[in-house]
Amino acid sequence: MTLLLDYFAGYYILNSDSRDRNQLTKTNKFCEIRKYYFCIAALKKGEKMVPGYINLLNNHQLEQRVLKTKEHLIKCYLCPHQCGVNRSEKLGFCQASDKVVVDSYGPHHGEEPPLVGHNGSGTIFFAYCNMRCVFCQNSELSFGGEGQIITNEALAEIMLLLQNHYSCHNINLVTPTHFVPHILDALFMAAQRGLSLPMVYNCGGYENLETLALLDGVVDIYMPDFKYHLAERGSRYSKVKDYPEKVKLALKEMDRQVGGLKVNKDGIAHRGLLIRHLMLPGGIEDSKEVLKFIKQELSPDCAVNLMDQYYPANQAAKYLEISHRLSKQEYKEVLAFAQRLGLNLVR
Ligand code: SF4
Image 1: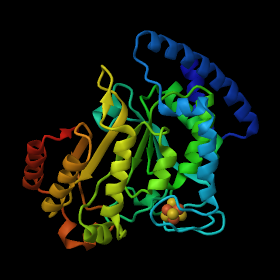
Image 2 (image 1 turned 90 degrees about the vertical axis):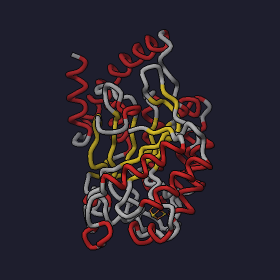
Image 3 (image 1 turned 135 degrees about the horizontal axis):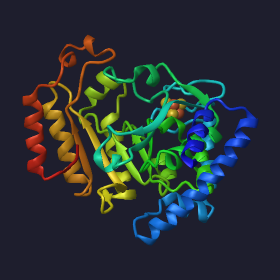
Image 4 (image 1 turned 45 degrees about the horizontal axis):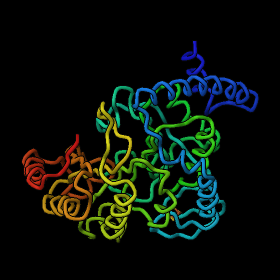
């Protein structure tokens, strides 16, 4: 019966008027009580890890972070583009206004095993992006803004639904950088109502240190891309001039905050850094430099996913050298290199 109620609650999140919302609130109160007993049972078994944002909530720092991040909606310096725009009046590089846009959400079983576990990773796909990757596989939402404008309250409801109805192992925020103020506001509301899943910050790696400082203690698992080591490749393929410089600083800060990937006895991650590197055709040497940086500069137990699933989506056909798939030989060579370095590889 509870699961049925949860299901209908989810259906109404993106479509409800205030009368429906009152009903939803009652339903979620029921879910919260159920979740509370699940948490207590898990704590007794020694399985439950308390996410960082609960501590921030308890010492009233979370609401301070919400206020700090909301300042960026009036003058946005959330990412290295440093647009400085009032997002209710003007759009910056990312094209995101001051309202959060969500394309879809739900349990995702295609992410890395430490995030997926048995019940899936609770992904929330946000519209827009602060990069313009010519091979982007989600260009309709990343560049086109496909999705639905929702309130921060509705975003909080989605987080609670992923926990209470779907029993996901984490909240996986996909391309979150430009919506950090909305996410923190929603998290503040959801945490007061029993949200207790680890927060996964699943980003492209083009991040500002000041924004990461506001996420210190809020994010439990960082999952950034490390796309290129060579600046020319960042310029050519993602339209950002200083990608390597910014991503390296960001990775060091993420590592400082959460360190290597920590998993529970079932292999499910609750804290740490997991870096993704999507290999591009013709980029063997650049990929090796990316891996060397991880080895030399970051914690030895940072997890690395060396990805071979590149295909020439979006505008990639216009760039001859990446207009085809990666060869098996290219992948094998770089995988062997990563293994020789002794990296903590996950797939
Ligand atoms: S988040 Fe968007 S508006 Fe803000 S600095 Fe980055 S690109 Fe510019």
